[in-house]
Image (cartoon, rainbow, N blue to C red; front, side):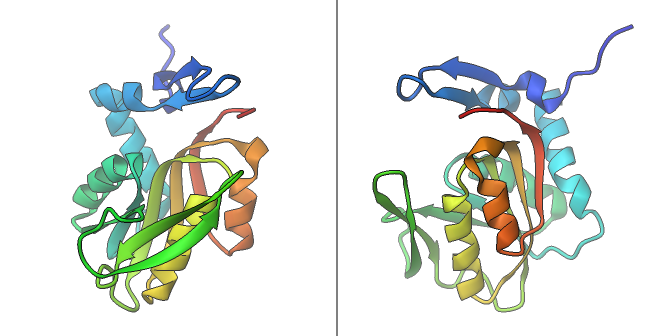
Length: 179
């Protein structure tokens, strides 16, 4: 009897990256495997089957990969939310806190129409700061987030609770304890 691989089985862990003490969860091994990648996209979409979705929003940078694949699967548009200074047109900005600093995310000011139903995706949910900034940007444009989907949750860092406190429906494929 052969055991079935899960999405988590395709993710490798690299110790001490980017700094000592961090266990980096590398999804490039998941993306490189056609079965794993297909499983990932299908499972990210499953909880939202039957939902009206007009746009998929992907958070920089790995959210672009899964967001593009999901948008293609749904035949809807894709909107990137990027780090400050990366988008060429008029943008809206949202600052958010990092551990010892502040960062800024941006979206084109015409990327989402008022009333559009949006699915937000990214590879990893840690503290929830980036996702919260993305949610605020979508809402500033008048979009309605119907859900947030992530490949990995690091529950010890509290991101899921933060997004759920914002009223978001959060779906994750796997969890890794610790950071």
